[in-house]
Amino acid sequence: MKPTLVITALTSVAATALFAAESPKVGTPAPPFKLTDAKGKTHSLVDLKGKYVVLEWFNPECPFVKKHYGSGNMQKLQQEYAGKGVVWMSIDSSAAGKEGHLTPEAATKQMGEWKMNATTLLLDADGKVGQSYGAKNTPHMFVINPEGKLVYEGAIDSKATANAADIPNATNYVKVALDESLAGKPVSNPNTKPYGCSVKY
Image (cartoon, rainbow, N blue to C red):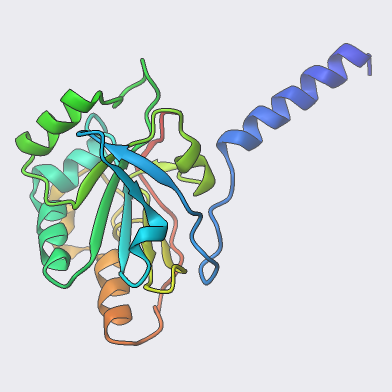
């Protein structure tokens, strides 16, 4: 193989690896991060030690995200667990010029229009946080316990469709993981295959 072909092949592999990183393993510490919200306020995962945290990868133009917000399913979950002291962080990792990218102004508008009950909507335009978590889809969900360790990673539920009619008959994996964790039990299904649109890094 010619040297130029080797370099091209290696570059291609490196680029693929960058966007297809594996998610950290359940039971290991969640990767630390600092991100700003639509108002420019910085949120740090380290500051949330002692709390349960949900990370939800978000793209308002994705049909799978619209399924859960258009039906009110995501807002209901956010509100229910906020009442139990859970911090819910929606994260937009879409790059500038890509589908779903939100400016601070657009993010504020989006939260209002969809009546989002997330604790915050964080902007990750350079994709570094998304890549550190191996976030592949919107929505891709993570649950972090008060010790800062991942207890769940994967899909929001068991019906990998964009049809809101499937929600009532689906098992909501995030709800199960939170309920079990809050009750002091191990999560019975800690890893599932995420579904949805690809994250637009």
